[in-house]
Amino acid sequence: MKPIKRLAVIGLGLIGGSLARALRDAGKVEYIVGCGRSVANLEKGVELGVIDSFTHDVAEAVSDADVVFVSVPLGAMSSVFEAFKGHIKPDCVITDGGSAKATVIEDFMQACPEYAAQFVPGHPIAGTENNGVEASFATLYNNRRIIITPIDQTSADAQKIITEMWQACGAEVIEMGVEHHDEVLAATSHLPHMLAFGLVDMLANLDEHDDIFKYAAGGFRDFTRIASSNPVMWRDICVANRRAVSELVFSFAEELQSIGELIEQGEGESLLEIFENAKSARDAYVDGLDDK
Amino acid sequence: MKPIKRLAVIGLGLIGGSLARALRDAGKVEYIVGCGRSVANLEKGVELGVIDSFTHDVAEAVSDADVVFVSVPLGAMSSVFEAFKGHIKPDCVITDGGSAKATVIEDFMQACPEYAAQFVPGHPIAGTENNGVEASFATLYNNRRIIITPIDQTSADAQKIITEMWQACGAEVIEMGVEHHDEVLAATSHLPHMLAFGLVDMLANLDEHDDIFKYAAGGFRDFTRIASSNPVMWRDICVANRRAVSELVFSFAEELQSIGELIEQGEGESLLEIFENAKSARDAYVDGLDDK
Image (tube, rainbow over all chains, first blue to last red; front, side, top):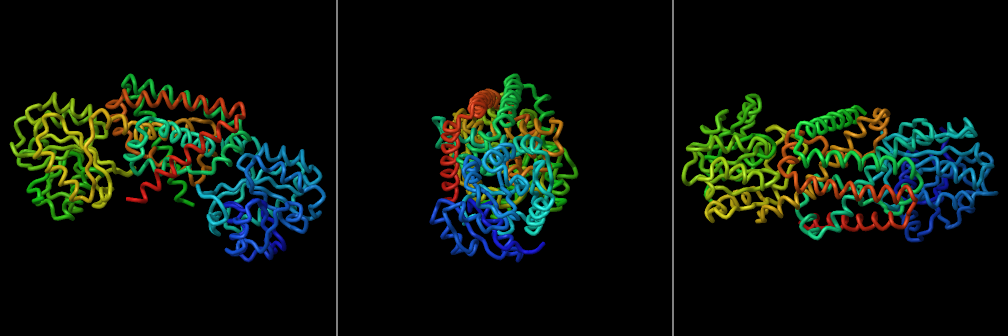
């Protein structure tokens, strides 16, 4: 791919900052403008060399851009897209990093359907529990998967540019249907986050919470890591992907109810079966990762 | 403390093997005999220098021992204690590594109450998801907490010997009531394991399970690490601590049901409150760890 002349990153956090850094390191971008609300964060971005300049005005940020990457919480997507109207160049390509795709596409089509051919909805399957441009790093996408969910209107050229952009960051790009994406992500990411947030919330509300956290072993730290994620981002994801997420949360509540009954009744054999099934699935999953 | 002349480790896995290695490294043990069922594992223990010799016979292993450490799954404790009868020296001290204490004490008092004064029930809050003597390492207990739950009969001398033994491994020893231990551990360890096992089991049973595991992000690996734990050990823990664990599993199923309803109804503000509460509790817990 030819380097991107001007990249606009709307929402300069872990996800947007890491894309900027990765493209910069790969020599695949000439100029990066950052856009967001926090002056301190944007100034930090310039200081760290992640972006070249910044603005708080979305219209200004995108007006000369060749590629626009939107990495704001899902609840803020709509107002960003509204601000695009009349400011996107005809050959500019727009993509995003939203964790639920149906809602982003809906917001986009309501706000600026005239740019539909230039829009390639995407979702990088990468992240840490940390936020802000300081948490970003150039290798975040290295060997990770990026799911893109093109819409009917998405042009082949636009899709090619975004695919190559992510490949330049070391990522593998995979195309998926919108609904399938939202269901798979509800299972692998949104549900686990609900369990981690829910567990820590429940334990924090118990009387003996001091002792509980004091005597938590190593496994607890890993298990609850995702409960340190950004609450606003996760509120938005839940609301955006509410159908798929609530369905899975209810199914899991039922699964837990059955497990609780097996434990109460001391049904060792049935419990063993569940644990063995889980262990072999999880071990196989990790072996699969090691292959990469 | 004076070095232990003869240590018997009944059940030579991660927990027992790591105690043996730590005491050996600290110069606090002269001779270690391992006891278990798997010849291959015990031979590996000798080869790695973790133990000096081994036997499959519990009575033989403990007959000359000065300290006996029992680290078998909870379901096997009872038969180990039965084998003690008539073979424990008067000055020998017995301890264990069981993750639930009420049941171990009950098993002990049924099998060999004559040794009650020599028994110091214990639980090292340490571990990894790996099993077997090969997974053991000398620093497992370094800077970790060991909970001991002495019974009324436990002699002060016995408690002192076990306390100093763990301190020699770099651990901090904390005394706790039996019931309180079992409740705290149900919350911090047993419940999280049920969530991890239950989640992976449920996902593995979904139609699209291949895609689900394929597109799981980094957080999923950490979140499900404990689902790779030993299924037999965890079946035994659930059955042993069934009252406390099942209660918490039911409470959490209810918490999830409420979270699911909030998501379904798009109640962003209430969700945000839960997530923020969880994040601050978890961040505070991790900050506390860093102090250690």
